[in-house]
Amino acid sequence: MSDTDLSAYKRSAALTALDYVKDGMVLGLGTGSTAKEFIMALGTKVAAGMKLRGVSTSRETATLADRSGIVLLDDNDHWPIDVAVDGADQVDPSFNLIKGGGGALLKEKIVAVSAKQFIVLIDYTKRVPFLGKTFPLPIEVISFGWRNTARAIEALTRSRVVLREQAGAPFRTESGNLIVDTHMARIDNPRELDAALHHIPGIVETGLFIDCADVLIVGTPQGVETYH
Ligand code: 5RP
Image (cartoon, rainbow, N blue to C red):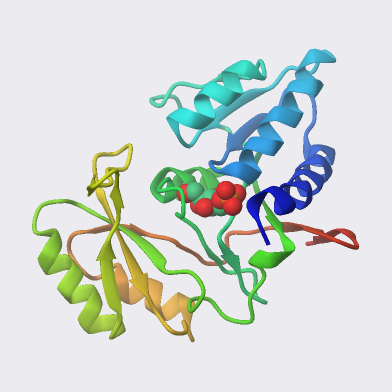
């Protein structure tokens, strides 16, 4: 199914998430096409008089938030985030996630775990019986010695690791790091894998979001499903 077909499901999930937004809240704002639907929908709330502040997980999101009239907190502030809302690339039956398709996983994870409540919005195609296989696990690594870090990831996961590129050059995250996409046939134990990966020097953060999601909102052809 094309992204255009799926955008209606992303939008319906995003509109449902508006129910969790109250006047005066500080929101964590995710990155990607689903988060974009949510941020644009917030613009209607602001236009109707709601006062919202936000923390952005990317420059792209900061631009959208600005257009929607959301005042952004400074990177150096302490953020009292009430609700963070973001998309995901895969969600397993325990609501563990793979994120980072858009390369914003580090900021997204910091914001998600800083929030009192983390809401994940997806279209129904993102639900999977287990993580991996149809989506590589993004891992953010520092550029110093990245080939050695990639080898260590390969040895741990026994999987192919590919440096992410953009326009023929290594993709750089907003924190100046690299992303290696790890093509795993199946992630049997996401928690164990995440812990093991964090022992490899050079890894800044992984795209595994374990026990983070408090609410999952899924746009489906039959309507919106919400799980707490
Ligand atoms: C960006 C992400 C996104 O949330 C994820 O890639 C989903 O994107 P989309 O909503 O465009 O399908 O993790 O780093």
